[in-house]
Amino acid sequence: MELNASLILLIFLSFTLLFLKHVLQNHQKKKLKNKYHLPPFVSPLPILTHIFLHRCSIFKVAPILRRIHSHYGDIFSLRLIPFSNPSIFISDASLAHSALIHHGATFSSRPLFVEPNYFLSVGGYNISTAPYGSLWRILRRNLSAEILHPSRVLLFSPGRHWALRVLLEALHSKENFKQSIFSLLALMCFGKKLNEREMREIASLQLFLLRTFTSFNVFAIIPSIAKVLFHKRWEEYICTRRKQADIFLPMIRARRDWKSPEGKQSDFEYCYADSLLDIHLPDEGGRGLTDDEMVSLCHEFLSGGVDTTTTALEWTMAELVKNQSLQSMLLIEIESLTGSCNEEIIKEEDLQRMLYLKAVVMESLRRHPPGHFMLPHSVTEDVIVDGFLIPKGVQVHFIVTDVNWDGRKWEEPMEFRPERFMAGGYGEEVDITGIREIKMMTFGAGRRMCPGYRLAILHLEFFVANLVREFVWKSEVGNEVDLSEKLEFTTIMENPLRAQLIPRRKK
Image (tube, rainbow, N blue to C red; front, side, top):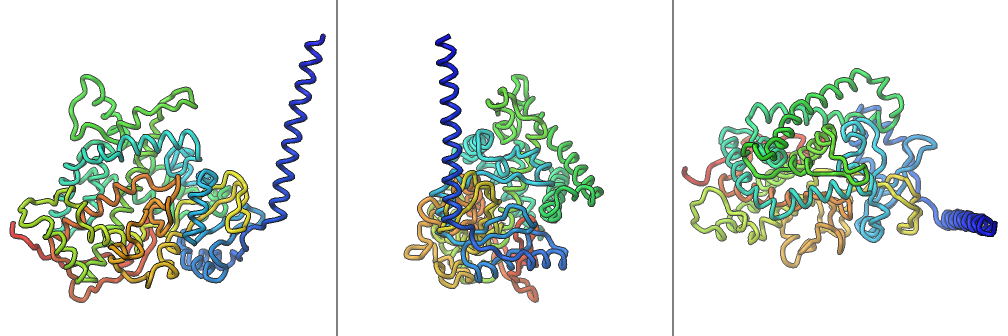
């Protein structure tokens, strides 16, 4: 009897403490909300009018947001639909540093994405869209440790040489950059050198899915009825995804067979698909990834690595065509460090000594970031930034270009000046991760920063150095370089680069 009474008393006290804790937390939240306010609200009418009048994607509103930023300041709120949670936009480096570094854990989650991204990511089972937690940590750790670790990246050096030779041959026949970058990333993903037909088939499916994603602005505004209104378009999207799975899954299963004792050798010993086959999810009974989840992750690997790198490479070469003196300075550095070496391809270890090359690549990434916005962040608890309340659950958007082009920090920010990243320049020894200080946000910052930034920079340095050494790059007569932008999945050149290529060396 005494035991029962003690147990009842203990339960009563526990519930009382939990109730008091709940009341205290609510009281503290109310005090916080009474003391602090949301960032200033702006009217959604200019944005909605622009979207519907021009029939453009919701992703193509960067110029309007930059005008809003100049009027309302570095942080503001926007509510596209009445009574919905607001979205908060941050366009200042110091505020971004406060949010993503000082309050890194709070800002590390993702909002629940609507279609078509929810379908494409199999409910958030990829690195870009997964909420902050154990699943995201497992997937990101796998990519970082198994594929992007320097020792693994070094193993793919022969693959980079092969991809460069593909590109050089293509350039001699006036083709573009994308095939070479795609062939390299596909090799890293599936451990197989794809033939031209396979590459074109996969690339066309990837392009359709990505273009559809950026054009489905209606899903971001009225997701509940979009599938009904645009059911034919939605069915076409699903059909394309199934075709993608039909191509990816045999290559993934081939890697499973290769890993068995009787498996045959492939082009490379280890690839991203191998690492996915090794993943087990402790919070879900130790199960492995499903076929759909592996297809989603391979799609993410290719789309995240191919389009961004191809876009950045084209912008870099466009600037070197437009600025011949910079191209000459880069060539002088390359020749001074490689000497009269007759090797067909520059060694990767030589790239580490090419400081001007690194400056050219960094300036290109600052001036022409492939994405003008980071993927949205979701806040896991109420937090104060710059004296404003950012409530739990809201979406926070960081405007990359406003940081990269901030005239208060970068002198004449729209000019292409690699010397910014040389000794004495504002960008000298820039911390691309943003941990010490955010000066540019091309790869994001904080815990959700792009895990492949080192690989992307290596690929850009490798291709730019070899392309400049191989060819004189000049503008075609009557086709001067036009730096106008156009948004697809990334921000590309509206008028693609058309250059006259003159071989520097005799074969």
